[in-house]
Image (cartoon, rainbow, N blue to C red):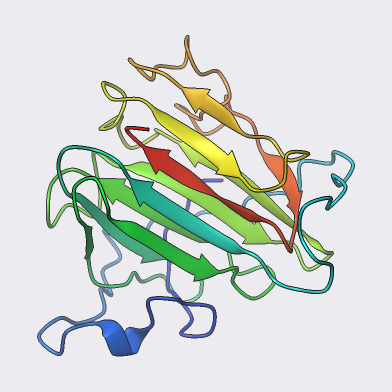
Length: 200
């Protein structure tokens, strides 16, 4: 459920070409834990009411916090992550087209530069290859945005979306993973847009 791994240039809005030459890809076993892809929840696929059929959607992050957010994207094969991206205070955004099937992704967000491990909030998703995306939010490696609140968002109202208000604990937001087994995995059609809004 909780993974960190490499990105494929295919599917990135912020592509590898946008990375400064001084930065390199993170290939660090300590930074990329070995874990399975987000499983299909087994729930019926929601009707894709708001998005044109036959297109691939995206995963996104919006930073409405009063401070910058530091973000890595990790894939599954091989186990490595992108360089750090900085989302500017109040205005920073990140978006990527959903990855190729069964290449699970973890978008890791933190408040401290250079911290790929924790404390981080993780938006995790897998393109199941069957016309849907399985996704979740994880605080297994910390709760840096709990004091500010955050939202799981989608442009498809039929897909699970929810606010997690402060303090962002499991008691308040039982759908967020705080252990490897205690959260909610949801499904959304592949053409949809899903993501996280921080401090919204």
